[in-house]
Image (cartoon, rainbow, N blue to C red):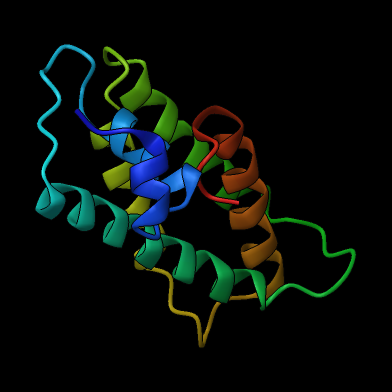
Length: 128
């Protein structure tokens, strides 16, 4: 049996523990191992790093590109509507965000991405 206090003492953040718990489909038995935990947490940390880099592109009061935001939200919602499949929804979101070229990414596109991710994080509570 594992306690959250033990995982916190091992250096995991509460959002990372939450992510590990919701990343497994609710119809499947949760298989905890140190290796599984590290793997899932590393994925989240990489994702957050990309999100931070995108966020640095934004200047104050930038109007977000709603097309970019809509595409991200729509893809996420479609996967979540398929039996709350958080793993598939997050993985698709990860892939989509990973494909943006930070060198050529425009300010309004970056603002749109961050805007969409903030709305998505209203569901997940793990990104920001």
